[in-house]
Image 1 (cartoon, rainbow, N blue to C red):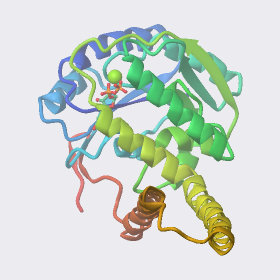
Image 2 (cartoon, rainbow, N blue to C red):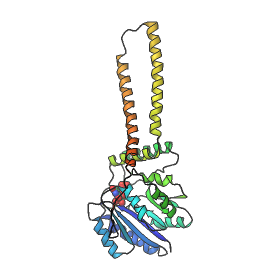
Image 3 (cartoon, rainbow, N blue to C red):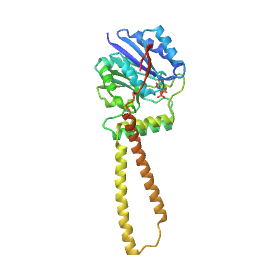
Length: 313
Ligand code: UDP
Ligand code: MG
C-alpha cells in the first residue's frame, strides 16, 4: 500500500490543532486505500502545541512529530519535515486550516495520474489589506522578470510532492531558505488546482510586514543576481552621463566663460550619486551576508525529539 505523509509545520497552534485533526481524520478515514502519516513539526512553539500533538499521538498512531529545539521559522521547519517524512508522497499544509484538507483527495487523484507536484493555487487571497496585496504582486513581478524559471504568484506551500521531489528538495540545504522558489527550481511535472483560501480559524498570522519584507528579500537574493547587475549597469550609465556632462561644461566654459553658478546642480548630483552608491553597497551586502551565512555550514534546524525519542547532537 502506498503511504501518504501530511507535513504540518506548527508554531503556537495549540488552538487550531484539534480542529485540524478532526478535519484531517475525516479525509484519512474516507480514503483507506493509503497508509497515512501526519507529521507535525513543532517549530519551538511557546504554548502547549507539543503536548496537544502528544495527546493526539496517543489517540492515533498515524501521527508523528518532530520537536525542534527552538523556533527556526517555517522555511527551516519544512526542511526538517522533508527529512523526516516517510511517505511515497507528501502533502504540505498549514496548521491553521487555511488550506482545506479536503483538497488532498483531489491532489492524490492527480498524483495517481503521474503528476509529481500538484500545487494549490488560491483564486482569492483571503482577507488581506490592499497594501499587502500590492507588495506581494510587485515582488512576484520582480522575480518573474529576473529569474530563469517562474515563481508562481498566489501559490503557497500547500501542495502534494512525489518522493522524487522530496529527495530533490532534501539536496537544497541552504540556510537562507525560500522554499516557494525551490519548488519551482527543482522542476518536475506540475499540476495546478484552484481553491478558495479561507481565513485563519483561530489565532493570528505569524507574519507581519517586516517578516514579509525579509522573506521577499530572501526570495530575490536567493534566486536572482539581477539586482547586482542593475547596480553595475546604473554605475556604467551614470559614469557615461557624467563624462558627457563634463565635456559639456568644459566647452561651455571655454566658449561662454564660467560665472560661478550651478550650486543646486552640484548638491543634487552629489546626493543622487551618494544614494546610488549606498544602494549598491547595500545590495552587495545582502549577497555577501548570504555567502557569509552559508559558509558557516550550520545545520538548518536542530531536532530535540522525534516521536518521543531524544535526538543526540
Ligand atoms: N509557522 C512555523 N514557524 C514559524 C511561523 C509559522 O512553523 O515561525 C507555521 C504556522 O504554524 C502555520 C504556517 O507556518 O502552520 C503558516 O503560518 P501563518 O498562518 O502564520 O502564515 P500565513 O497563513 O499568514 O501565511
Ligand atoms: Mg495562515
